[in-house]
Image (cartoon, rainbow, N blue to C red):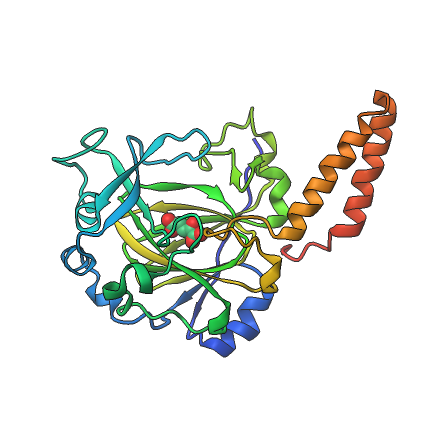
Length: 318
Ligand SMILES: O=C(O)CCC(=O)C(=O)O
């Protein structure tokens, strides 16, 4: 059986803004940045402290009976809990109080005040905890889009997806495995919107997803204090190896008007991509006016034209 090619995500130490902007960022490849100052959160964010400082404000969390959460088939439910109760439950293996079963898994992706309109911002939703976390100054402050809590039960796995903005994922406590795939492997990812239909990336169903083996697997295990640079459009899948707290920071690197204005999550396609996809749908509809052999012929010519006009030489080859 063909095996997926595996590549370790490179680890960089002593990274400052200059090193990041000159040596790492332009390559548009994932990178682990070790030893960047993230502030006192590294020492402070123990369970008890998080519970006290975060207080009892309500948070909307994902809860599931199995640790691998699946957005496409919605094998989880959304529940509301006080933050301090959520942290308690996420940090324990079995629960006295539960929604679905005593060993259910929890995940928090924090949201903005108005979930439909406003991106998450730790400083606004969790001011007490935000003062412990220092956002790495690798981009201009006006490019900032959101800062998002990622708090997971041990074993929690988040489905493979891409975001449209550049992202620094800070692992503050606990360890987390992250697997990434290049945007240039998009044809092997069986996408449904921004999510991959291949749910089990470790034991994929190759009868359903035969091309998935062709996607190169980039992998790293984040330690407390690590930052992972996830360039926009790179697919990523996370697996919490322990109960852990992370914060991810998205920033805009395209012109501000390139992004969908109603996108609090940073995962809606840029407006030009949405317009192009709509135009493609119209073109396909037009081809339906032709008999099958003509459709096939002009379809192939369109594919060739699209490849010629849009693909650029593979940047991520070794
Ligand atoms: O850390 C996680 O659980 C998910 C991170 C993620 O999806 C992101 O940073 O975009």
